[in-house]
Length: 116
Image 1: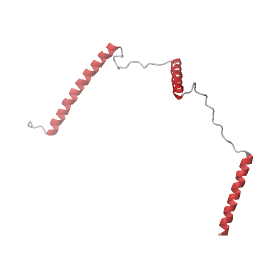
Image 2: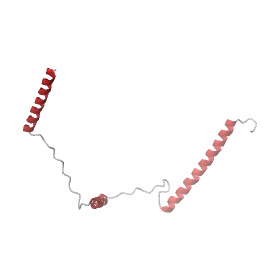
Image 3: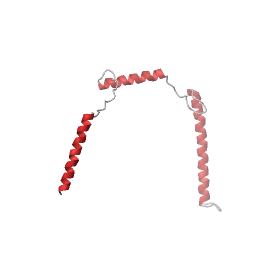
Image 4: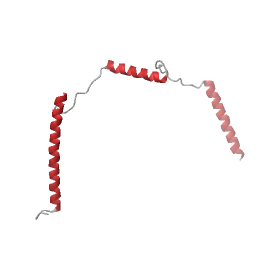
């Protein structure tokens, strides 16, 4: 150890030196990235190539092709239009019958508990 320097000071100096090296390496990487982007035709500042956009017609064509592939794998020719499942409704007569049955059940239960 040098005179007048503590281990903490030496540790901080070593960290500062490593940080400086890391900054230099980062600058070199950025410079090389910019050169590479110029060569391959990208944006030299951000390194990004513009996002590719697809027309609605192209998306529809791809979607139709995928639906056809799924239909083929399922063994159907074309996807059938989905019909909503019809709800089963209770008729007035059916409702009355159930109501009467419940009344009879509860009457029997009340009668059984009254005997005890």
